[in-house]
Length: 248
Image (cartoon, rainbow, N blue to C red; front, side, top):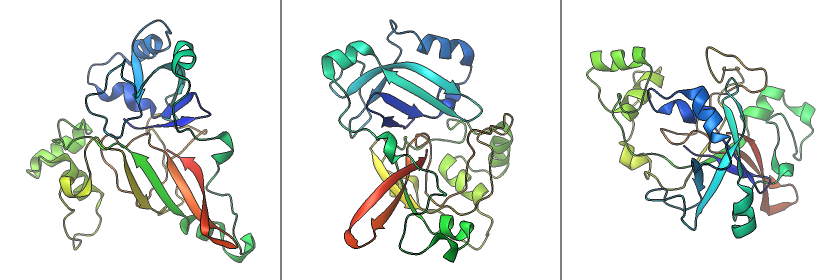
């Protein structure tokens, strides 16, 4: 699972983190993660996320600060002792860098283009840690999706997800997973928002706090929680650009 540091000592990620392991008692696990005196969770800032442990130099012990399952957001905080002994992680998003996708800051007046046009033209990137390639069963896809994959004789989760999301049979098959992602390595992907249609973060528990948008940023297992940012060149300074975090 990916995420990002916010305001020096907060770590933001997706709330479905806890439910990824089949059979997990989600409410009890959240309560355990709130306890300061238990060694339950840590965040790695290493370039490669494999073979990291609780006591590593690039590992940061955290505890659960708050969770909103319907918005699929969980916020962790650095343990006070870690702050005293190690300080803060080397990179963190400042609160001033948070923004809505509806913000407009450019050379043309906002009324020159529709709100939809302004949002859909924005350039985005995401930072995350893709996990290793997995089968349909290992990926924990919905039971209905697993049944369809079995009927279609597709075992690879990446290929099946690409096949299910494609609405155009004439499109070429996707690249192999290994040609698209570097597993367990911090990565950057670029894209744009494809539609302004609101999509519930969780289909059975709709939130008014947050909602999802379909975008062209490629992703897979492990990418959830990574920050999604808008980047734009500063007007009058063509070699300078600014970045705003608009979601995860």
